[in-house]
Image (cartoon, rainbow, N blue to C red; front, side, top):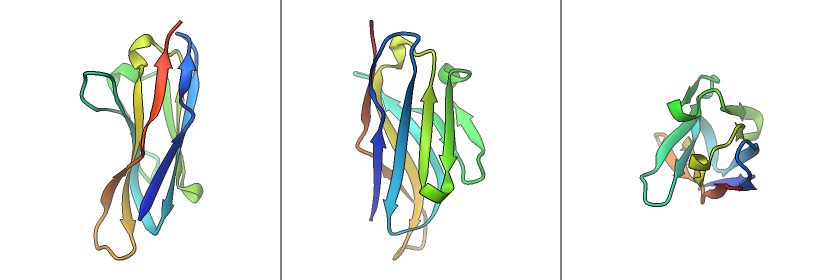
Length: 121
């Protein structure tokens, strides 16, 4: 019912920048919060940043001041601008959206397939 398509991952040197995008499509009536999570090898998935439909944002302490999340409600799309990347930012980054779709009476969480970000020299 809802597809989240991520793009923008890749290989970057320490100190470099990347911009991730996530576009939601499908039988969408409304989207509440959207966000980015990441999972490094051998670790649990963790929150990176979230943004509400009213543009309130929340960041993990480890990315504050380096990452910026933004949202285009007209396009059902969020972005993650990642600057000053560190090797510990290496992970698969997943998009998440809390969505109300046709045929349902409540918001449900959906996940993208993930995009790999590798920070290495």
